[in-house]
Image 1 (cartoon, rainbow, N blue to C red):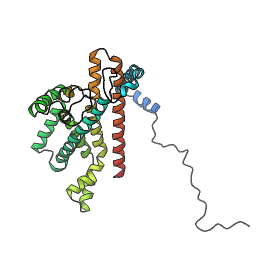
Image 2: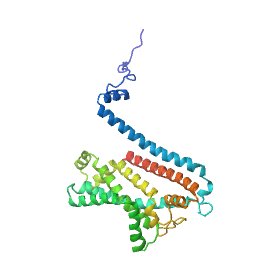
Image 3: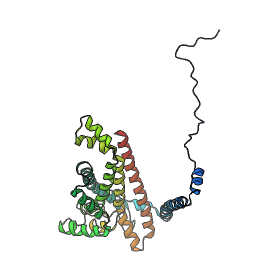
Length: 308
């Protein structure tokens, strides 16, 4: 006698979908065959792939050459806390780099983000002030770094009397990365759908609450991308910081004291001509520092995005 099956427990004959292939999947061979039917499109595809390979190859070659030349010269004395002519330690330069980068971002990010919020959320695209701000940002983005260095030296070092200090270098770098942060934030805010704003307003939220609770968290990934780009420029800058933060080999003890960054440290060692091995070793640490900082910023950005 067969065992009775309770009602609602009947076996379900579900189809096996593990072997089903999507009908809209296009393989690489299919793409090549479709491009071969149109010679012009095929030529454009080859040019695009060639450009991508050249870009990746150039970056890989620079990093590989730097690592091959620098890793064998990494020695413990290069990481001692105090710099001396014997050890040529880069540790003070690493600390100064992190110090100046943190101060620069603390100045540039709030100003750039708030300026972008004004242009996207408050002012109309046809507003005359918006056009002036956008033109000023584009002009600042195209100025060479040596001009920023001369301006920072004349304004912050001599006019305000702050001398070669962390504050002078950080303000100069803040001016340099401000257009980058502002434009990337502006594009990130524009990418947020208007339905987010309309839904927030429909639920009774005000404009300020909508911006800080709905819009900014939704645009967080784009804002973090701009911050990462600005951070990379601060860490890798030399010309502007030589004139403003100085090239002192010790750790800056405060905002009004100067100190060389790691990029300036590499430049000084390489230009001396006697310490090329130490310069390559410092270049390796500089690349790793940029990678670690960018990775941490991306990790924080993803955490904030998931949280909101």
